Length: 198
Ligand code: HEM
Figure 1 (cartoon, rainbow, N blue to C red):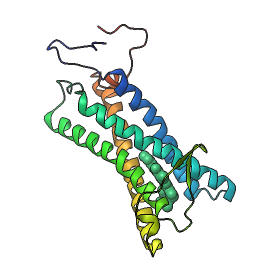
Figure 2 (cartoon, rainbow, N blue to C red; figure 1 turned 120 degrees about the vertical axis):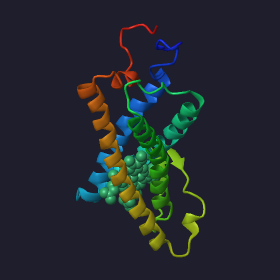
Figure 3 (tube, rainbow, N blue to C red; figure 1 turned 30 degrees about the horizontal axis):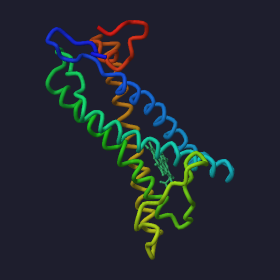
């Protein structure tokens, strides 16, 4: 799989692993945001809420593991260079946004994991009802867990709101490239269905 290259011989599209991780994680993250908001603000019956918490934790830990794989892949495989028409400032902003998105995909699930690890309820995490998942070290044994849980909970909530804002900007930027600039940036992250890689 050589991947498509532009005239200068540089890779001009993301590879299939990067695309697969991008779109699967996008789906998982949108589900996590919807479930997170529903379980905290939805006023749902306790049984439903409990199941949503378990699902949120399961998908969230999956996202953490996928993000670590994605970071490793990204560090080992150069992404395509920015399209030539992009001004310098926009390249810097895009690179910064992508770096913060990576950081959030790792730190946000860690903060959620810290909430459940310092929770006074000490509810075990069993991923998808099948795989027992440990708490973070140290936190479950604190003498006074409530203020620690409250702090991680605020961090997780505000972090999630910041993440939602950044994802919105990211989507708007992709749409601007696709609909206004028409410079083919979005297609670099889309598999060319039915077309053979050159
Ligand atoms: C990318 C990953 C994640 C995203 C985008 C995400 C998103 C959210 C959102 C939007 C909320 C509602 C916040 C509010 O309105 O106050 C929430 C709450 C929560 N999430 Fe996550 N979450 C992620 C990962 C995790 C993980 C891995 C865990 C635990 C293992 C977790 C545990 C919780 C808990 C316990 C709450 C309840 C509110 C709190 O006490 O902070 N989350 N999450």
